[in-house]
Image (tube, rainbow over all chains, first blue to last red; front, side, top):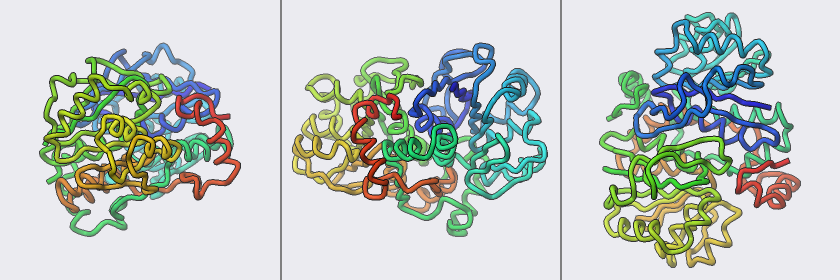
Length: 216
Length: 216
C-alpha cells in the first residue's frame, strides 16, 4: 500500500504530519511525501522545512492520497499540475483524502462534487462554493473520499483510515504507540465550545491565523 | 522569545511538530529547529525529512528548549555536544521541556535529577533509572521543567506552555485555530484504557514500534 502525502510551500505541518505519524506505522504501508519539486518546502509560519522526496510524476498511482492544507492551498485552486495529478491518481486510489483546507484543493480539482465533506471550520463556506456538501463533523467518509476538519483532525482521520486499511487492532496499537489519549488544557478547539471572545478573536484575525502570523 | 526545538536522525516527527504547530503561532515567538548538523534529518520510520535550520552553536541561549524523542534518542544518552548544549542553554532558559523519550535525553544530561517528570509510558522505568521521579501524567511541570508523555502529548504540552508564555486567551485562540477538539475513533491511547491484547501487542513489539517498524 503506497500512501502519497502532498506537500507545497506554506503547507501547515501538522496537516501532513498527523496522518503520516499514524499511517507510516501500518504494516505494509509505504508513505511518500510528494510535491511539484524535490527538496524542502517551508511551512505556513516559515519556521520548518519538510522534504519532498518524490515528484508527482514519480508517484502516478498511489493507493491512498492525502492532501494537506495551510494557506499555500490558495495557489493550488487553479487547474495545473497538482489538479492533473490528483485527477489521474484518483482514478485508481482506494482512498482519496484531505486534512483542513486540503479539501478545497480536492474540491477545486472536481473530486468532491456533490459529496459530503469537511474542512477547517473557517473554510466551510468556501467548500460549499466549490460544490461539496459541507458536513460539520471531524472526519467525513463518503465512498472512498475521507476528509478531516482543521489541522489536528488529521490524527483522528489517520486512525480511522488505519482501521479501514489494516483493522481496528492495528489502529489501536498505533494509537497506544503514539499515546494518543488527548488532554487539551482548554475546551477551545471548536467554535461551539470556545468562548465568544476567543471565537471573535480568531474570526477577526482569520487571515493572519491562516498565514500563521501573530494572533495577539 | 526564542524557542529551540532539537532534531536528530530517527526523531519522531510528531514529537517535534506538535509543540511547533502551537508555539510557532504565539505572538512574538521565533521557533528554530536546531541540531548537530544543518540540513534534513530523517525520522524514525524514515519516510520524512525535517530540516535543521541552525546548528547548536548558532542558538546558544534560547528562552525555551524542546527536546523531541524517537528511537534516535538512544544515541544521545552519552555525554557529548547535545548534552553540553542542553546544560549550557538550561542555565538561561525560562522553560526546558521534552516530549516522549526526549525526557531521557534531558535526564541523561543531568537536568531532571530528583524532579517530577514524564515520558512515553514504555520508557517510564528508564526515566526513573536516570534519576527523575516518574509521574504518570500527560504533562508534568516541576519548576521550569515541563515534560510530556508519548508522541501526541506534545500538542497538550504546547498549549500548556503557550498559556504560560502568552496567557490563556492566546492559547485558546491557537487551539481553535488548529481545531484541536480531538475525537479519537478508539479509546486505546493509554495502557489503562486499551484492551489487554492491544497492550500486549505493543509491549511485545516495543522495539519495532520505537523504531517505527511494522506493528502487525
